[in-house]
Amino acid sequence: MRQPLLQVENLSKAFTSRSGPLGRQNATLQAVNDLSFTLDQGETLGLVGESGCGKSTTGRLLLRLLEADQGRVLFQGKDVLKLAKEPLRALRREMQMIFQDPVASLNPRHRVGEIIGEPLLIHGLARGVELHREVEQLLEKVGLSKDHFDRYPHQFSGGQRQRIGIARALAVKPKLIICDEPVSALDLSIQAQVVNLLQDLQEEFNLTYLFIAHDLSVVKHVSDRVAVMYLGRIVELATAEELYQSPRHPYTEALLNAIPALNPRGNHSRLILEGEVPSAIDPPSGCPFHPRCPYAEPLCKKQRPELTKQGPDHLAACHFSGRVGRFKTC
Image (tube, rainbow, N blue to C red; front, side, top):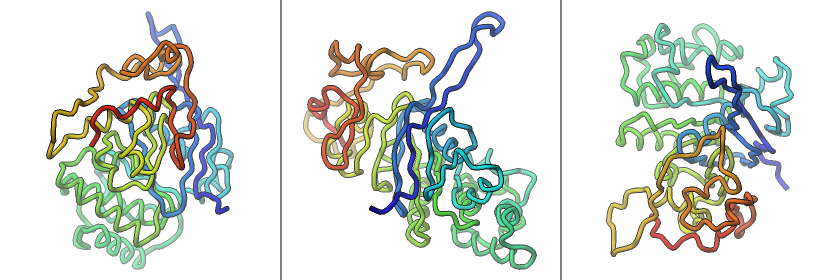
């Protein structure tokens, strides 16, 4: 069997915070909890869930922008978490990231040519005239002009700044790009343009994406597979088509019901997700979703369900997954 480009096994990360008077009490927040998934070359895996579920932390752990507490991250068979400084630096050429906030991720004191060209300099890929030419080609590749070379980030719109971030990630010709909510800060019309650009670049360069988002509607036409996260764990993982047509976890069903229907038909009831995500410092017992779940039974409060097969290429962590689907989904 072909080895996946990326293989994540039992990845976990906890943060310790201080609370109480004068910050004397320590509290542990489990941001990512025993996460496992694979990603094939050329594939897009959508990673979705509400804010605070651990999506962005997962992306940073994969690149070792944060250090994991345990687990393995195998990229082309190499464990990223065990690499020394120099091998890790070389490997980062193959793994890049597009950040959520195009304003905060670009140095306001540097010109666009410097921002995009910096990775090429760091990895010794181009200098001088060759570097200038490479940056101009990258600008045009993402829909900007080579005349933008000497401008500063504040002279661009939000969508244009995100295109600059995409060009910077693309500069070193990576195999994997982690897209951390790359369109959530953009207007809807601009979101579609950026998503289409990412798809075109993926086809041209055979890129692999981990596409992080909090909105299932954003990843609907982008992802080959979708993983749904809740309180640091994957609660459902399936092909995009299967997940949208036949969700097997009530949280996924609620997220799908939250997508606005352009042409609503009939009087179908919709599952409205009430309440906030529980605190990761003090999560509920048993299934972490049971306080918000319309299908919850006493068993759900006592025993956490494991991620189990619900069909070919479909996993879900729910004791009563057979009941899921009685509400209208988009």
